[in-house]
Image (cartoon, rainbow, N blue to C red; front, side):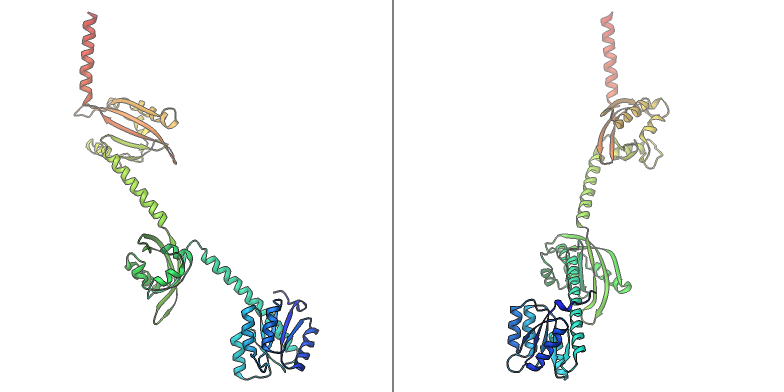
Length: 409
């Protein structure tokens, strides 16, 4: 704390006894103060109005006719925020109590002497400075709380909020904390979509004293659902109002809504893909199978595929390149086509290949298309069963060969 520079301070001395006023004025000026004088309460208030540069008031309580020192002090404090030290020749309790109700900067008996008077003034300045710093800190804290990106609150377990910041009011759907505070009389019934969550939170608070990241579905003032994370700390308990708690709330509604929309979108796309009759797989940028549809799974089950994962997580290219036997003729060509898609050399791959089982001959058409995502290139692979088309194509090819042979003859 920096020392008080008395030579920069202006004091208003309010004293109706002229001899005491002359003495006090002389003492104060010797210590560097600039001194103004008023001999009654009304004159003191008038001087304070005309001179806003007054730094401190030395106020006699008993000023004779007119308003007394305590009333004059009240009126001055309505004009300016400054320390007031009361001067009195009385030590009775009622005078002390009267002074303390007006200002916290104390009083000095007139017979205390020069040293006590000056030290009391210095202490009043230091105390006033400390109070100003405290108020400034409180204002900054209140500002920070009000501007915090989370909802900050204090509430009672019986169902009312005692205080909240603007973000808390916004989360609950109100324009201001005052409107929210006046609205809620039963937090459990009015805020919680499931009041049992409120009961559980209070039980945890009684047991542990704190609650962290407690998930709550809340009902906003407009009836919309909000997804919140509640943090609370037990402050105390009142016989009538129950537990007093304070804490903060994180609003996860936007994230939850986006997540729900994303999940619904994924479910919709999954339903569309599963409804397709073709066997479909999605490959990532490394050729690893990341998803298959229901037709693919059914084909795997019907053909005795031993892989429980229906090859999800396996590398499609490596699987094709290592495929054994003549029944998977064209697997190497398919693998090379997929590789070209992932490298960006081609956009579409299409080829026919046989895939015979011990019981029947089958032919498939492989069609693969590249598409890009935030995670990189992906490939959609569709295996279309064209077995029913093959006999007709074989007959047509045979007829064309017969016709060409007749022409040639």
